[in-house]
Image (tube, rainbow over all chains, first blue to last red; front, side, top):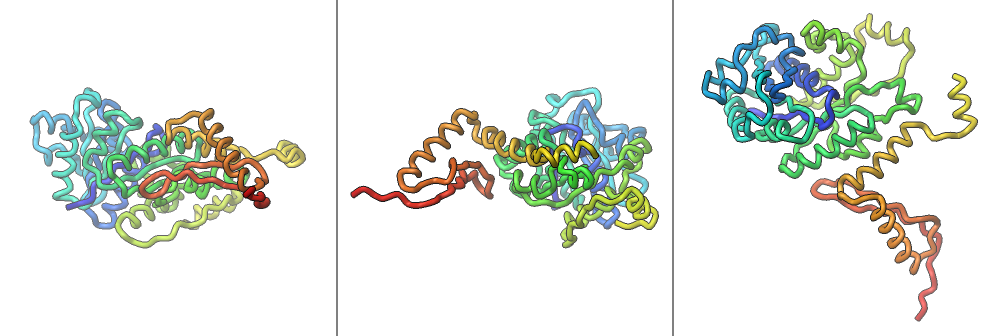
Length: 264
Length: 87
């Protein structure tokens, strides 16, 4: 049976879909079979971030309504082997799917895939309930900002109350320059407050916007700071022991040189 | 640059320090579902009880921390001495 991991945050816009897209692709690059599942019914985003939006024909709603087989609804990513997307319906809303129905789909997918990554919508309502229904572990995404951390704390409490105890934290959009100036919480602050296991830190990376503009997840760009971070997270999820590097505020020129030389 | 100089002269706390202490305080309330008044009462009462036995440096600090299976109310008690026990 494959692993069913829900990626959630509470707060919107902290990088759940981006993380699922990049980590899912990275795991496929490592040779694992991966399905990424968009659970944000009505406001789907995973398809557009992955650049697969024009190839979505059937969604999880069609599968639940019995209009098509699950296998037929999976969009195959042609850029890497063993990566598929199950898109969410854009015309329905979250109350049109019940947690049991999502659970059935995810369990079925886990029979034939190594990883089922479920992209949860923001919030703590039915979207989150549906997304977490089948999960045996969770990736909690937060940014080092007060609102995000507060919401992450709430979501952690909710996940624990569902007996999902394998919780891994991703600190996204860490800006070493702001941390150095004392204007941003550092990873130790965030961990001290949230007290769950840290699986990775993704640094602030201006290339993220261009990547979603193009529908080409940043993981394909080896020189990007965020790509390297997602790569390491995927390897840790796959059981490898990869240390978390130190993120230092550097000079503008230093960072540019680093990019040209492909340092990560 | 000038702002940083001003901050240095004033000795103001960094915004990240402020953020951390605000978060710690609000999360105690969020996690327990209790408000600031109750927390303050708890703090005062705990301080009173402890000061029957100890002389305290300052007010007792209480914090709610997450552990593996449950929450733990953790208190930081600055003690400067023992009080005489009246027999």
